[in-house]
Length: 164
Length: 360
Image 1 (tube, rainbow over the protein chains, first blue to last red):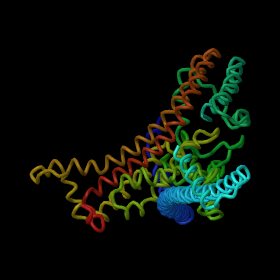
Image 2: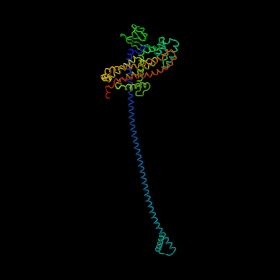
Image 3: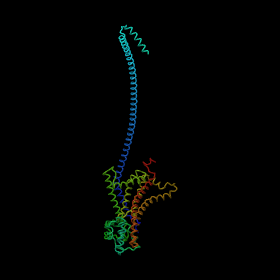
Image 4: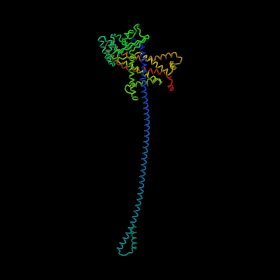
């Protein structure tokens, strides 16, 4: 037990020499390169992180721009479609209106034509009938009647029929 | 651990009952720590065969705790050189044998003394086991650090791996949470970083070597921890003077009290200057000795009671203490380094001049 707590100057001096020499050796051959590499790598990592952050920020910005553009073009597209639709509607309406007009004009024309044709037909029918009647009367009566006089009588007769 | 093996060996010449005990303890040793098989046999050859009565078991065991002039390595007793300085004359002997043969000095109770007047030499610079195991630790750290540095050189800016990773974790932890966190001046912290890293790895490795079979814990010697504390003392105070100035250092001795209290404060603060490193030395020494003493006592109990039935309990407790010791080893290396950093930071105080002042 004696000597357990005692201090030996020899060991102390050895320890001092050991430690100081060792510290100087390690400082030069271990700590300097080690700490140097460490901080170099830390800087590299820090740089990489900040670069990545920058890139991320830029990417985010581009994404936002793109989204904005897309939204804008979507809106534009919708507008174009809407416009197209209204235009088409108007076109159709116009076409329909025109068609209606044409139809009406044609109808009116046709009605007028029919009327005229009917008048002409009626006229010629009247003439024909009167001629037929004259001829028939001439045959039946076998007597020469003044055609003009006859015609007058027949006309009067037809008028009477017409009135009825 | 090998202290108890010494004892095993010294009991070698005793009765058969003793031999039975010895065998059990040898096996016990194996389970307690990954003991070197060779160690168990070889110490027998080394020991002087003498019987120890139960009453003196512990005294005998503790006498093994001090420094020795030889080490047991893989079953061989290696002699360590003895160097004495006396009256300006330096004597160098390669072993105790050659010392005894030369005739000037002789061994008395494990300590070398002069034959003429039985006084120890003025200065005993012998390479004891404590010095030797410091060298082993230094070599180990140097090799490991060179390997790690090589790896950094080989692939810089890559993620660390393996040994490099382990060392880097410790180095970065020391740098960021011990040195930078406690020393407010960046310039001083950078300058002292090599010291703190060295002190941490040195104490850690020296402590760990004490756990290796055949190893000795140099930090369980007050001489070694005292020397480390002396260096810490100079680191603390030189840094304080460099960073805060001589005036501030002296002002610090007042402890911020009014000038009227100076007679008391100066005594207290001057005491404090020395108590801090003294506490560092005592703490490390006591912690590192305690574990070994408990292990010795646990093993000694077997011989004290001269009963094999004590062995299981002893071994079980020894295993527990070994695990605890492993924790204490890391803890004490960390505490010594951290406290030195804290004391340095306190000594600098907020008197730091230069670039740091701009921030205040």
